[in-house]
Length: 128
Image 1 (cartoon, one colour):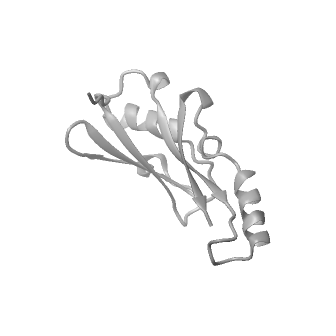
Image 2 (image 1 turned 60 degrees about the horizontal axis):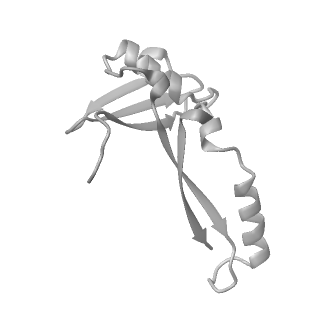
C-alpha cells in the first residue's frame, strides 16, 4: 500500500547574482499534475535564505493553498562522505580532510532556516 500527501511542494532555492531580490520577484509557482506544485524561491547573495518565510509568502501572496504551515514536513537530502583507499582519486588524507569538513559544515536545515522539528533527513553514504 502506498501513501502520498494530498499536496506536495517541490521547493527550489536559487541564489541570484544580485545582492537582494525584491519581495514581488521572490516566488514563482508552477502547478504540476496530481497535487504536485513547484515553488521556486529566489534570494540575493547577501540574504539569508529562509524556506519557511518563502513558503509563507507564497501562501499569502501567490495563492498557494496550504492549510497549516506549522505542520509542513521538509524532506532534505544529506550525504555522508567516507574516505577509502580502494577507490582511485585523491590521496586518503585529503579525502579524510574533505570528509571532516563536510561532516562539520552547517546543516542544510539550519542554513535554510527550517525548524528542526519539521525536518526529515534522508541520507546516503558515499565512498570516495
